[in-house]
Length: 315
Image 1 (tube, rainbow, N blue to C red):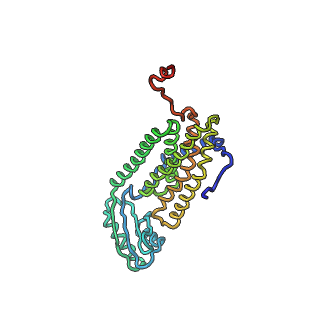
Image 2: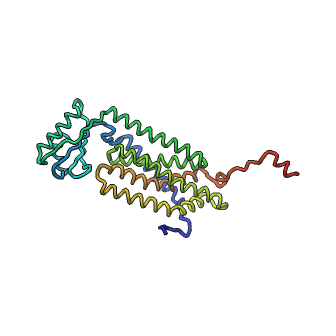
């Protein structure tokens, strides 16, 4: 009923493993080069700054609000709706020697002086740079710890060649996603960090499904080469992958289009991660396991003879 794709013969995915390897290397090198030069456009969650929520009597037009703040020397202010079109969230970068309360009052005075009708302050918060730096360190530590835990898990569940492919595929996905944000200087906030952790889980789940089928087929296809086993396994799981990825992408596109600017970074990171994660399950994790020399013998448990078995056989 839910079969969108069913191949009569295995698709030769491994035939294109070499071009895919070069593509992955190009993307990783480009991402690392961009991270080394441009680094990341940290959001106020990490750099610190002032967050102001104001309410308008009439629906607020965001471009006009940005122009008003720019005229008041608040260039680069992040302005977005939250809740409704009458409520606006404003994020101001930290200013040396100026307290958050003072910045909030200046913003409110500028908006009240413009032709926006009645404007009132709803909330004001200040995030110090020390707190932002601590969040960045904790976020990076969370990703590293998650990768270590995943490495331990897949090492216990799969043969080491498959485990190495799974872990390197996860690192591949994170580096390329971070590189995309670095190249296009998209704002990196806490929602993007949460999306990165979700990408790790999504990519790992897809890889484990493929690896389970590879392990099973190695035991069933006794005369097949590793390339043929991998091709057969990926083809058999392709229908499941297309359904899972397709429904997830549909939801994320909807969030990106109608969810507002507040979750654009979150949905963008997940969209990139899903595309890259699906690709890496085939052409990084599986392909790397083949390159490391995985064979049928590695999938078959070693039979340990019981002590005294020879004597029993002779009797």
